[in-house]
Every structure is written in structure tokens, then in C-alpha cells.
Image 1 (cartoon, rainbow, N blue to C red):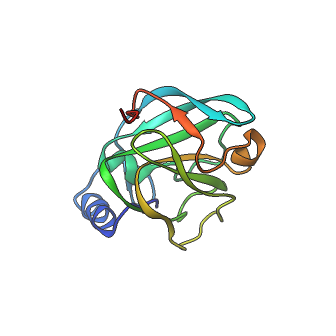
Image 2 (image 1 turned 120 degrees about the horizontal axis):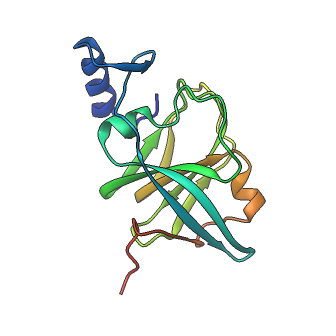
Length: 160
């Protein structure tokens, strides 16, 4: 299960105990997510990433769990209302991911590449972030993505 804090994990467990519809073991289904194409601008050029947008607690709880593949130019964007330390894990996530922590203006803050599938090890943003972009493992290196690069999306607000 991917979590950004313990409260979300507890709420998901309570929802399952209350009989919520399930898509996988222990996960409440939240329906189809909003989709958006992001433009990732690096010093090497630009890359389009087709993303699902996880806005609600239920969508963020589900994340990419139980999926057995992710495309080379696909991802999931988790957006938070305010900057915070974001913590995730790979429990019930079967594919390795690159986790890209992003500021409110779209600036890439930190990248954790090649996460370990099915691991309960906590992966942290290390500092306050407003979003997390999950990509197929190796994508960040393939497109030359580094901290300081920018992600262009209506979800991000450039600083004046």
C-alpha cells in the first residue's frame, strides 16, 4: 500500500473493515482517476508523460498498487493541498518505480530511483513537497531528469 502518512493507512483499513468495494486485497476502490499529460522539461529536452492524477485520499491510498506493468511514458501524480514531508512505501506495488518529489511550482526537488517492489521501507521526500510523480523505474535516468528540472502541468503554479 502506498501511503503519505499513517492516518491514511488507518482510514483505509477502517474503510475495508466497513465493507468498502475492493480492487485488491485491503484497498478501497475510488473509481477512475483524472488523466493529464505532463511535460517534463530537462536539460536534455522535453518528455510527455501520460499521468493519472491521485487527488483524493482514496486515490492516493490506491496509487499504483496491484498493477503488474506501467508504460515507459506513463505515471501517476499525487497532489497534496499544502507542502509536506511525503512518505511512501511499495507494499503491494509489483513494479519498480522512480519517485519524483515536486514543489508547488513544478520544480523537481528529489528523485528516488528504482524503488524495490513489495517493500515496506519508507521512501521520504526529505523536505516539504507538494506532489509526487511516480514513473516506471529507469524513466528519470532515460529522460535525464534531475533535481532542479521542471514539470509543466496545470496542477503546478509557477512562482511570480
